[in-house]
Length: 93
Image (cartoon, rainbow, N blue to C red; front, side):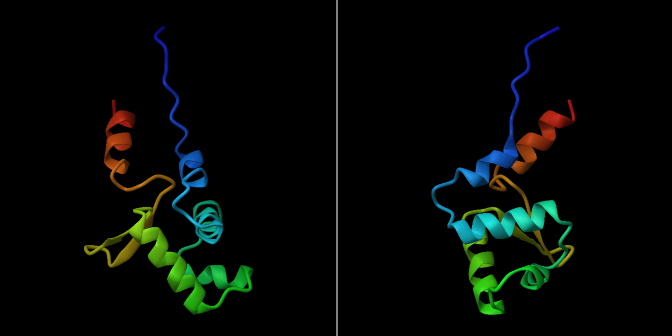
């Protein structure tokens, strides 16, 4: 049996120094609580819609959220989207 390299993508955004604590908390809520719209988070915090819009923009700038034109949705992941397809290809092996 060969050696495995374990890639823990969930840790990646938590250790990213470019993200604010608010953005890390928002993304954690989205990834772990089956939240389907950004504004659902508003039910669980004191942040306003304007705060949430700023957080979503920060996550888009840092490539943790991207817009899917085909589905008209925002897609979120625990790693920057440049790596999403690379990890998917590894999982398909």
